[in-house]
Length: 212
Image 1 (spheres, rainbow, N blue to C red):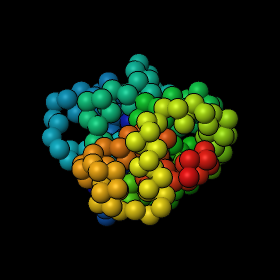
Image 2: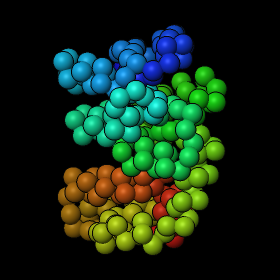
Image 3: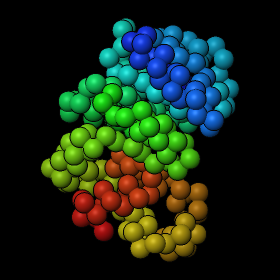
């Protein structure tokens, strides 16, 4: 996988570059001290597979990390983004997730956890969130069940229920009388609205919310 690093602290940036570069499954696509320089690099040399995952801090000079995440997901939606930062306040966490971050780690996480988060996201589509941040997210979800429930369409709720019953895409398509591609679109929308990284996360949040 090809990983791009955006970190303004030179010591931390070099440490991340060295640590990730030691893994045989990871190639460093580039490392930058600002969002602007990273975006310029992508714009000048973009091609599919150029970058798979971006590891980004939030407290950057100039364009903020959240602004960069939003811009990247708009222009390069297939890129997955892992936040690695010191910020753990609710506003920063939820702003980054809503902007399109797939995983959220704190700089207090151990080095092997950073590598594991990148690999989990790339190979399994799994979203890694630091335990301290996960508790905040769950607290927010518990207090916001009606709002989340209302943003799902009836067809998305039906699809989610069938997923919970262990139905395959083909079975769901047959039951709902829609195409498999439409099922995939519904599932993608569900993941986005529930801020879920994969089926397991979607089902966990759905059960927490009382959907299934």
